[in-house]
Image (cartoon, helix red, strand yellow):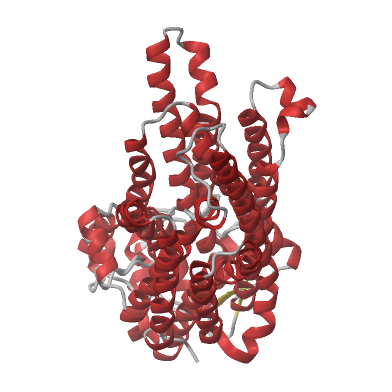
Length: 545
């Protein structure tokens, strides 16, 4: 659809006609993706279960790669001789970059005009970075050995390449969750968003469980292990293959309706009403009305002089200063949801990052610092292996609980699910810290999955509820409701940023506590933060009735 000067000199056609004409101008396959209601709102049609499962395959592949990284990244770093004082640097670079850049990418994807869609180009790019990072940290030593012969230089470059691979992988794997969630919200109705989030949690747990099992197997004695240079290359082969297949399935799951700017005149339909407000022609049509940001019709004749248009260009090239202003100017209920999400991830990561070490040192009473041929060190290694099985139990229980959530939701609502997730995790980690026993610890690992599934579903479900509420307000109040419009991409990105912020806080503070008080402090800290978050979830987070 091309807008001419004459179209602005007359009355605008009804919003429903604009929506229909816009859909007719897209490709045939895109035109079938939405239905137009009598109010003019464009509603995505119901998605088949198979399509939602295909969409969730990206979470399966991502979590599979995450699990293999959790099992092998420390042995890889030790094998290349990384100095101990560089460990914190490796784990801090990625979350710092993600925290600063993720909202920028989320906002950029809200305005992406690629004919392939708004989210999928970013998902594809981040997926390629994940594969590159895995290739570097699992094969960096072998690659450098083939290129550099001098021993000292080879050792130094092996450390640099391996660290770069870990940073790239963590950066992209953390980053990709926001565009995936925004992609789901863009192409699904409200009911399908709920189903999609549950399938995301289900396949996330399954991917993690299979990833941990793959890492637990002894590949050195297999034909594949003997044909490749090391066990790390076998793991890379499986992880890269699984992720690549899952990524292709995900990208082919549900077509997106592209956000197009066909000529300069169309740009005046962009609207920026507040410093954090982003809107587009597609979103305006979806909500049944169009509103020009230029108050005089003569501005339409020369959009190059329209201040709103140039202001929009500035907004799309967000600086870090405007980004922070955007986050701080979010509505209060969005900020409260972000804080509760931060509490949840701080508690969860404090337990997960040090859990195998806790099993080896506290439950099994071993020592990682003892000589490698000593009984203490062998005992510690057995505890680490037992911890891996505990993490596998966590991943499986997360998948199971994602289905239980669907049953519980009509009875206890999102508030009940959110509260139970934090409460059970806080109690389970507290009991493990107070009574460190092998059998009770493995049994309580099943409750970790409740927290994992909760963090992957309920906060994003609330984001969907907030957006549906705002869409209803726009339909009721017409043009005056335009001030409630927000981009889904930046909201999902701001929520996902809390994961990186939690990693930064833990990387700076928890490592010092562990060095002073030992590994037992990790589960006690996780329990304390989870119970504080439980109170915050109950009294501060707003739930849509």
